[in-house]
Structure formats: structure tokens, C-alpha cells
Length: 279
Image (cartoon, rainbow, N blue to C red; front, side, top):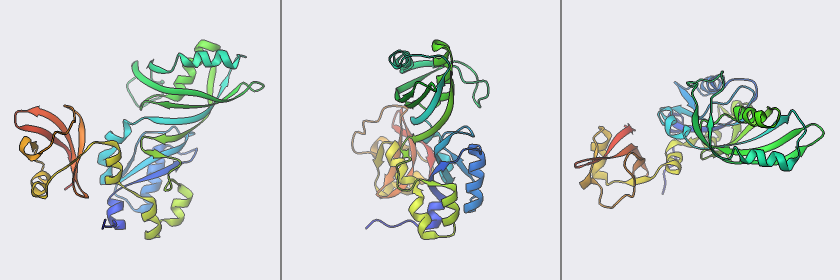
């Protein structure tokens, strides 16, 4: 029978799927969660602008080490943009199609990354409603991590006589969604912060989330202590072909016990080296 994690274990290595409100920055939201739950540290998977709401997964304590793997996953947004000049819905759809697929994007002036053009992918960008009187467009888009929606709309506007973003909400970030049962806002989190049973229902065990984003390799119990000291995985340690490509990351488990995240290499007898070991 699968052992239930204690609240201490979840707070030490868990993730909260938070509904970020409009107003505070993502970092201010982190600090609020840190204070509410008495954490040593926390980090979020993908920054949202202060006015943007929605899915902001927050890693607790040791789960902060996983941020790099989760941040690289695709994101889905629903928003409203204002079109500056009248345009038919058909023509707008045609122009939007030019921004679906691989695109080049220059990050906005006010961003935390180096301002140089980079390639990103827009998986889809659909019009949900078009209010022709107000020139307001309700849309949904799914994009590669690191794509700026405000800039996407601005660049579309350059083609159609102007456009800007009015509202934006993130509905999905990788494996986390606003439809998840444990999706929670700050107000409700504050109400249950002193209830261990209710917090257990909200905090996602980091191991469970890892299994959803990375390939998993099972190892024998005899290897566990060796791997927890940071030693690499040798060819003789794995009996079956993994199908994992060189330079690809994967998770290592021994039954339900999470050992760490490794990267596949090709160095004589060594097939993988540790990137993060949970000892």
C-alpha cells in the first residue's frame, strides 16, 4: 500500500498550484506563501506580470531545485486584446496565422532576460469572441516557455494598425492547470494554512509532478545508497535499453522513492550523471 506523505514531507518537497491574483508581482506572491506556511525558501515556475492572473506553480523548500525543469514547459493563456483599427474577423484570423508556428521575438524593454531576438513556438492562437463595436478580441493561445504574450500582440498590431493587451490569464503551465482539483488562491490558502489535513490535499508531492514531465528509470535497491552519494550510473546498473537520448534528463526512482534527476551521457562505461540528487 502506498504510504501517505506527512505534512512535513510535503512542505519540504512539494508544489502548490496557486491562482495568482492581479496586483502583486510573482515574487511578492512567493513571499506571501513563504510567510503563510513558514517556509525557508520558495520559487515559482514561470513569472507572471503583476496584472496577469492565473496558474503560478510555487515550489516549496527543496523543490526549488526543480525550477529549471518545470519552467521550460509550454504555457496556455486566455486574454483580451484591443484592436486599434477596424478589421474583419476573417482578415484578423489570417494575420494571426502568421504568428503561429516558429516565430522570432525580441523580448520587451522591461524584461528580466537579455534583450536579443530569439526563436519561440506558438502552438495555436485562436479567436474565441470578437466584439466589433469595441474592437475587443477574446483569444486563447498556447506557447513555448519564454514567449511574451504582450509582445506577441504588439507585433501583430504592427501588421494591422495597432493592438494592445487589456487582460491576460494563464490557464495552464506545463502539467499544472486551473482545472486541477488542488488549484487554490491566496485567500483560501490563508484560511487553511493551519489545517494539516487540508494542506495535504492542496500540496502536490514533487515526486508525482516529476514523473509527469520526465522519463522515469527504476533502479534496484542495491544501487540506492551509491546513487545518493552523487555517483554516476554505469551501463551495468541498467539492464534494459532506456530509449533516452544523449543529453536528455530523466528521473530515477526505486519503487516510490525518488533518487534524483540525471542526464544521459556517453562516456565509456558511464551512461548518466546526476544533475540533482535527493539525499
